[in-house]
Length: 428
Image 1: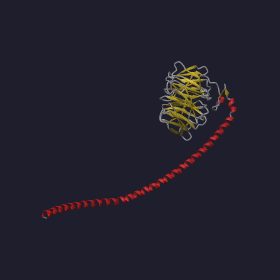
Image 2: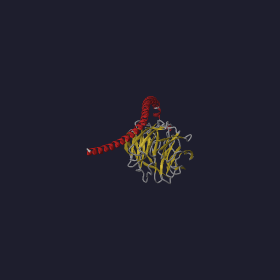
Image 3: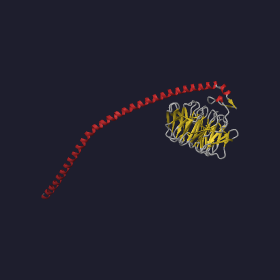
Image 4: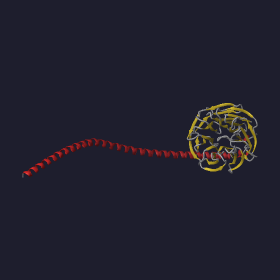
């Protein structure tokens, strides 16, 4: 019994030790439970507040969705109304065109010369035969770092030039004096275009933009942005002075609304565009590319209508004759080609010994009577071809640097040529 009592005593002591340990564990667990309950009491209000915020956000989201749907409905309704107004305006415009065409049949018949109708602009009825220029009339120091473009105002002897000095200048070719200077461009000016009324100048610049100047005030009306590379060429529709077209080295050509100052359509092409121009009725436009291809596009859809392998190297210049039936192209292969717009076939190919095209933006020109073609050469000469026999009519010498631009006045004279040093020669 003593032994059993001793064993029971030991067992009791062990149980008491276990009981003490269990009580300590229970006390620790109770403290932990109290801590968790306190934290839970803090989290419950936060959870309730977050639920309220989520409910408020859901309400706001439903309201925004409803407002967005209403705005879309209103926008679609406005677009439909705008489309209806545009359709009405187009119908009125087409009706006016039909009336004008019907009213001008007699005038067109009276202006037919050598089987070619010449009625594209005012003054066409005063058509006179143009003579090949022979002598130098004036030399103008126009631009300090080179003249890159020059064009005569429609039915005028006022010359508009642009250069690497970031300026566009208007010149009186009778006296050789400066009329006005247009500034604001941030880079070289590669091309300029004029509307039929000569009221503004549109310039294509190397800072990826086009600048729209008012001639009377010299103020920039619009700065047109959208190209991502230098803009090399620009033209304005012969039908509407508010429609312009530009080509850049980002392989795009853009239509512009000059009334509102933004792009209305973008045409993506396969090769960089060096030069472009509208046809006389603006239903088509043609573009010359670095791959030597002359492409014709539908102005309404922006889709290609035809393409011609015009040159073995890049095309530097594209221009439409006054009658609208011939397109003149110039290429880096030192060749100038005339294409018939109606048949899309070449009707003249002009070359000259020693004649070399000096840059990717060398501009040639065709006389108003379509008898002569003038182009500048790398050696500083201006070569004039007779279109009828494709032979050189004359070679004019007077520049000390390569000639980049040639431009012929609609009045028949003078012929202007501009070189890499910025000098402009006027020939008569």
